[in-house]
Amino acid sequence: MTTASTSGLMAQLRDIVGKDYVLTQDDGADLRAWELDWRGRERGRALAVVRPASTREVAEVVKACAAARAAIVPQGGNTGMVVGSTPDTSGTQVVLSLTRLNKVRQLDPGNMTITVDAGCVLQTLQEECEKAGFLFPLSLASEGSCTIGGNLGTNAGGTQVVRYGNTRELCLGLEVVTAQGEIWDGLLGLRKDNTGYDLRHLFIGSEGTLGIITGATMKIYPLPKSQLTAFAALPSLEAAVQLLGLAHEHLSAGLTGFEVMGQFALSLVNKHFPQQRVPFWQESPWCVVLENSDNESEEHARAQFERLLEAAMEAGCVTDAVVAENLSQAKALWHIRESIPLAQAQEGLNIKHDISINVSRIPAFVAETNALLEQQFPGARLVTYGHLGDGNLHYNVQAPEGVDQKRFLAEQEAPMNQVVYAVVDRYRGSISAEHGIGSLKIDKLPEHKSPVALGLMRNIKQALDPLNLMNPGKLLHTENP
Image (cartoon, rainbow, N blue to C red; front, side, top):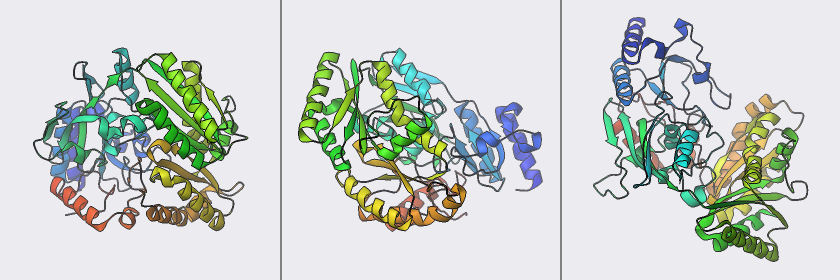
């Protein structure tokens, strides 16, 4: 873009959203909050940060950028893990922040749905539902700052996928601004609509590369009458899979969460957050936190839990367990699991692998990959934890003690990824379970995705965004027209 065309675009954007909501470095604005990715690994440079307050304003911004051939980077809470919502370093991309679109539009108790702006913070949505006597089950460590639009754009998972599914399964409708600046209103809230292609599924998980989600209608559920949490010690990862099977058998649909945590992961929590009391971590190679939600009485739920743990101990897959006596204790047990990524960050830079494998094959995958990494990268410390209930592991690697962490990351991340992803492929898994691809894994995707699938994805991208202005350089390599 020329200086004149840039100046003209900035004037248009200020007319659309108001001069206070177009931020540029030339005006002295500090753009770090929008340019730096959540993990602090990469910082881009934006042409401007634009903060519209309505879907109509988003549409007008997109039209103005399309006319000027300026690429747009949609951004919600900027809490992604794969550098998917930050601009590149060219200084030519417009960051479109949706945080001013933050309203709850309608809660419909009869239809059991809630319709919200895309910039609505996940925790706000949860609290609005709870006040009305309902549950919105998506739960993430970043729920105090991530937005529902970002959750949908990455098809976020979280800790209750085992019962309620990913964000995709919770969505009944979308409102989207297309790459041409048109508004598609698909906020029908219907559970059945068999009138052709289900367009919402194109945009969910597309990481902002096809259009901009501005609103969503989501499923809600009655608040459970009882909710019990247990923390169990296990002798092996095979025992964790066995316990999961017993939990499905004894708790059925009541099983809402099943998280596995390796000993070293828990040791980091104990080291960096000593105020938390971490059960069993010194004597057990693996621990599990599991949750049972029930619409029966608490007595009924507790009896189910006790029968499960008795069966598990009899089978030898659980060596010890504690059951939370109240909500405060339950939150403390969950807080241990949620603190693992924070403890990892405190320990230093690390290499993250967000992978999924069929649940039954996870123990063999971990054993094989551990052996390969220990052989090829001596001293590397393995931080393994995650959503065993749906086959999603955060299989992370911490630098050896005493090693320069930045150097370790620079020199070892690529070869380590190659080892881990090769085993993922052998086990017919996925290199991204819930974080997405972003720019961090964009070069890896062609190595692990079917050429036919990639071709279909490129065809969809070309059809919906022929100018390649929607979050270019993320998810999928495309040629600029």
